[in-house]
Image (cartoon, rainbow, N blue to C red; front, top):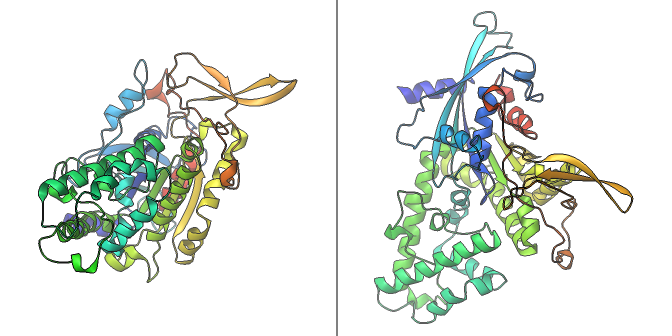
Length: 459
């Protein structure tokens, strides 16, 4: 009964399921916390000028409601906002699995067909938070174990993966894939491969890490045998016999695709209406050209998967119809205000090719630079007699505010030789101290534009 009611509400624009994910350390938890806080306080201030329902005075209020899916962990907004508004304030702890939160947004209807019958309407918004690592598993569904192994082989021929994978690759040379099944060898190989993925993520900020559950398993899969496999090099046709290391690795890979990846998309993606994907583009500038290439390829892989024509993977497998996707470059407060158009344009250029295909297939996409919680202020300084723009904030590893010019954001991708050391040095900052957080929305940059794109057409 509840499922049918939900379908009716979605058909009548009474319910929206908004999926939120992000590439590694992109600020997903902060984004959801700020979005919820902006809506809860949307009637109290004019902090959402581009969110038309709030700006026009039609927003009557927002209230947190019991979530519809009782088997999904709750997004702990209360804990996150307490951390942000503490003394001293701190960034909320990141989530490690899927979570959900429901909001009821009450508003004055602007629909000429219904506003005279029921002038006040309610839109239910379910916000589903899940790791971006899981999203990057989707392309595995179109790859055989052999094809996937070959892709990893090619990736590991280039730095930094070449050096980071050395210990794992050396272990692969100690056994033959056609050897009889040996659980100790399989477990050790998977541990070394997982360690390699963690190094890629933590040291270089790489995102294209598959399988995604190896670095972000969620509480339900920690220690499960389904996460004990890895790619193999030098696979030969005559290795494909029963009870070999190769066939066991292949079996677990196929099981992972069928019961972990497909299950996640069938259970959750079939109900998603809108999707936002967050990316910390500035991190890629700091880390260098290989990290940028990795982020670009990851984002384009995601966008390609979301194409909804007859050839679109999600449509072929699950009949999904997510109609809007927002790609957001986070931490827009870490650059000077005049650099915001550059940050946005750079992200657009990163996605240009696959973006055109997605829009052709009917997906409404947008790219946006935003800051979920603004933790710097615009400032000016004089350098060699010239007045220059700066930002002022408290660096994450300091207790004293500083003013600095963080550097220019290029519009086009620099050539590999132009990624010289220390060309980019975008700092991370502590959250601001907030005196009256319960009387107004969190300070932000362009979060109201994100709300308008994702929800504005529903009011």
